[in-house]
Each structure stands twice: as structure tokens, then as C-alpha cells.
Length: 81
Image (tube, rainbow, N blue to C red; front, top):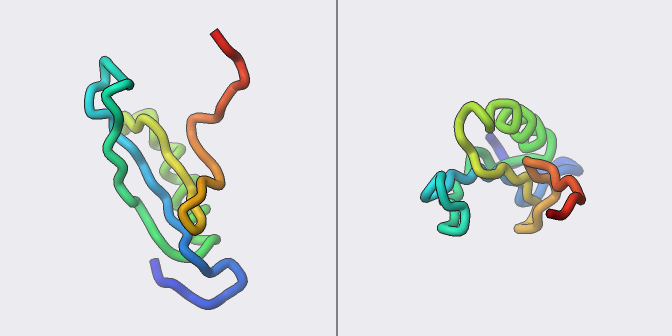
């Protein structure tokens, strides 16, 4: 992905995380930057990545702008146990 100076420019990135231990999420996860670039490109890659996240075993996928999470998968449900 190429950075450009359009209105959506900035530090946009898509991050996917794989759990260190699938049986114990408390062990944490390793994050991998899937893509970095413009907002439109990052949103396209985020959409594609979340569509495949379950099959690839991702713990979570994040769309970030300037280091802040903008969107995340899986979505929080608001339900508590």
C-alpha cells in the first residue's frame, strides 16, 4: 500500500493477532501488521481480513489510525456473563 497525501492520509493500519495459546487467551496474542497506508486502502484490507479471520484463527483484527483503534473484530456484544 502506498501512502498518499489525500484527505484520508495518515497512519492507517490493519493489525491481526494470533493467540500464543489457543486454549488460554490470557497468555496474550502476537500482533502482525497486515497493511499500512491510506484510509480507503486500510478499510478495504480490514474488510477482507475480517471476512477471513475465523478461518485463519485470528484472535482479533483491528483497524487503527494514528495508533488508536477505530474498528475491531470481533464486535463487542455488550453482554456480560
